[in-house]
Length: 428
Image 1 (cartoon, one colour):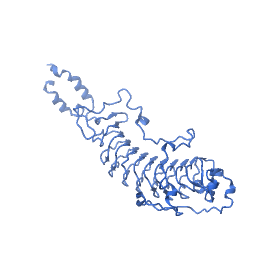
Image 2 (tube, helix red, strand yellow; image 1 turned 90 degrees about the vertical axis):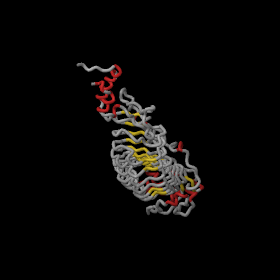
Image 3 (cartoon, one colour; image 1 turned 135 degrees about the horizontal axis):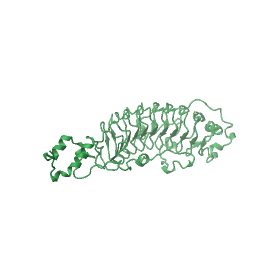
Image 4 (cartoon, one colour; image 1 turned 30 degrees about the vertical axis):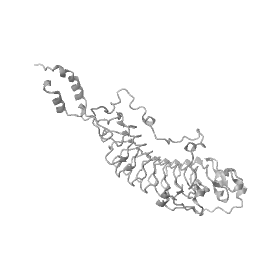
């Protein structure tokens, strides 16, 4: 006897056949998010989410959560398959220890532009041995734990600009032999320790401009044999040893402008270095003594230094450590006993960010991208192919809300016996 279907259920036959052809347990897409592949991607940016969606596709490799209102990150929020995680421009103020520990495939982590992020636990990034790019720009970090970057052997790009960092400890970057770009500009760093850059044997670009540096230890750059670009402009430097720059055999671009350079006998070794280098150098305008004010140190006559005593080759180094009381406005000591306002530590307004690179010709150097990345920068072609994009996350009245996201409860997530029970006995 042939199978007869009741008229009301007749239209469900092709639906059932379609459902049986789709693998059960297919990943769901959070509400208001867009999911697409390949690779498996969840895009949830700019939705005013106050927390990370509770249910995310277990196989997601890229997760975009930028421009939301997320305040806290906790362990268990993210799946182990993630390769790219963008969390910039949120309200993150707390990152629980172990949040990223199991993300062993993670290569890029962007936590930038979180204005309430003031502290980090020493093991925040523990276990991220494949991490290549770490973004911590434009937060409120005033200090970094000594071991915060330990074992990040694959890291190549480290963005720490525009925080409130005061100083950097010895061996802070000692495990980052593969690091090529280190961005520290726009902080409040007033001194460097002798061994702060130890271990950075592969560094190509070091940006320290728009800080409060008043002195640099003679051997601070001795491990940076591959460094090609060094920015020190917009600081409070009065002197810089020529021996310090002699430790940089690969240097190509050096920016020293907008510092109060002293063009007296203290400048002799730097002036000698200028005479023998082919490095592209910005203006080095004298601030003192009065008779040389406004002149470019590079073009002074040798007679200016003829009565100077022989250069003292003893290494210059100062290290008072990163003292917590400095964060509360305490006066910073200086080797010559001068008050701190003479070195830009008290009252000088910060430089206009638009002027950071005004001295660098556009055709001379390809500067890295400093602004937060956008999805189009890396993934513009993904999700636009015909049939390559899944439906957007459910946002209708039939959706189940879970904090800031929701899973779609549909036929795909139901086992076969349940499907048959819903369709009723008329199928048999």
